Amino acid sequence: MDLYAEIRSENTSKLVDTPFGGRFCGPIPPRRRVSLYQGIALSFYTDKNLTLPNLFSAEYEVGTPAPSTPCSFIVDNKRNGSILSPTYPGTYPKGLTCNYQFIGNESQRVRLEFRDFDLFFGGQHCPLDYVKVYDGLDNTSAVIGTYCGQQRNLVLYSSESNLYVLFVTLQRTANTQNRGFKGIFEFSESFVKLDFITAYKGEHIRGSECDQKILSKKESSGLVVSPNFPYPYIPKVVCRYFIYGMQDSQHLERVRLQFLIFNISKNKTIGDSCTDGYLKLYLKGQEATDSYDKFDHEMCGTESNPSHVVSDGPRLVMVFSSGESQGQGFKARYCFETEYKIPGTAAPDGSCNFTYISSSRKKGDFNSPRHPSNYPSDTNCTYLFLATPNEQVTLIFDYFKVRTKNTNVTVGHYGMDVCQDDWLEIYNMYRDDTEKLIGRYCGSTAPGPVESNLGALGLRVILHSDSELVYSGFKARYTFEVAKPIFGGT
Image (cartoon, rainbow, N blue to C red; front, side, top):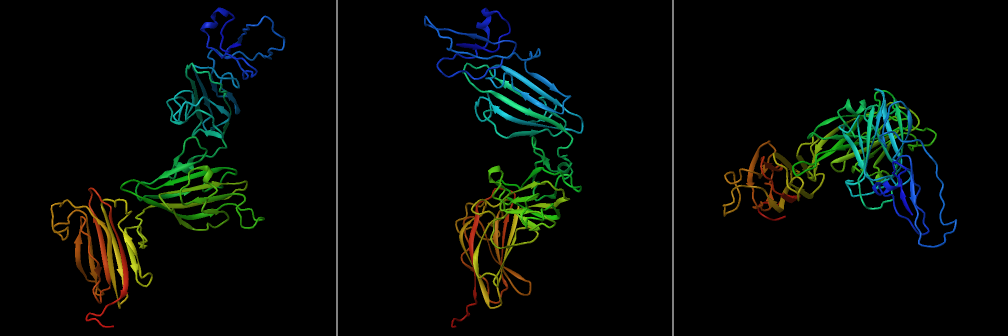
């Protein structure tokens, strides 16, 4: 049996010019079919002399005739409703271009939820059949996303009052059996207002109700707040915050977050658990929704615990769920700090200054920023090794590669004249606030074991890089030991 679901007239001689809907035989019936226009044609063929009445049977119903354009609609006078792809839930036709234009009032946003979505999957970027959703009045607006294949839980929001949906199917010879889509839409003034994002210079993630991303502008800082802040937040909303530090060959940052105001309503009848509203923190920057149960902190009530956090890498993610009760919400300050990946006590101002105190630890490691990766350009890092009065500190370099242009030197890269690009300097520090240079080093000429002088306060190590190319730097060890007598003995 041949099927034609896109006929325009009763003239059967024109079936040869009509898109073919498929040929079927055997015991498995075709899927339900809906005509694109005002009719369906079935062509039955048998090579037998006798056919029985129960060979096949079908029911049909006549629907409302389609408009002059078979599948383009303007939706501007309904609060809510549904949209269907042509002939849904039957196999959708080939060679179609359909659009659905949603026009709301000035204070409204549009929510579109696909309850069923089954398109032919032509590849990761959907080059064949697809649905493309635009965040505005027409296809010149910013794209929210392009979708094909099978989609689950696909819910999209407009940023403002308009949304435009484009459905395209290519003219192909392959016989596919995909249903298309069914969606429900809603215009509403009660969806989250995005002022709480734009007022604090965040960037709304298109298609979401209230998700945002905050990108570093190199050691920048700012404020982040709950929806509708400083007024009480709306019940039953979930907003995600993606705070991204810089991460490339020259930059690596981490995120520091400090809460200034915190009040998320808590169900007081169920102990300390956050069963109503909450704010979850993900210090490893998890982005996949299936990782959201692996949070580092869950907070609610009238105080944030902890009051400040630092991300484990360049990204920090927060998920705010408002629950059924209302509260003032939260306000927090974020700042992006350069991540040097250097063990030691870091300077509180986030600069590349690290201190190693004998009374805290007698031995350990230290290295150039981000070693074994390249250190950044235009950087000055200081390492202070502070001994007790009866101690000396010893430095041993296990790896050393600091950039220099002077490649013709045969006696080693050492001294002020040779090391003028990137270099490492080591100083003896004394208790009268004076210093004495032990040496300047560069290239692959590592300092030998360096020992602080007797009576010295300790050693200062400085790594300097200019604005040009960079190398992988150094890795070294330090040890604080009781001072050795000058003339031997015990």
